[in-house]
Image (tube, rainbow, N blue to C red; front, side, top):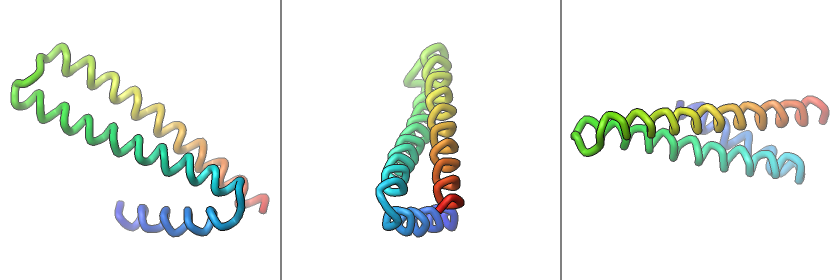
Amino acid sequence: MREAERAMVKTSQHLSKAGRKYAERVRILQEREDQRLDILNNLRNLEQRRKEGRISKEVYTRRRVDLESQLKKVDSQIERVLLELRNLVTRG
């Protein structure tokens, strides 16, 4: 995963320099990646609170479903932006 992150940063820097179209998509991609990390952290925290008995099973289940839905949406947005970037690169 770290190698992929480094490659993404390097690619993002290159694409950011290529122009406004690239820069805007890279900015959006970075925002979505940040959102994704926040959701994953929230899922871990939720799991920990449940293991410690600090929240009920019902609250846990509702929140987990909500977070998983958010994660799916963000992953879809990331994939869309990546496809847009690929199209921009292949078209020049």
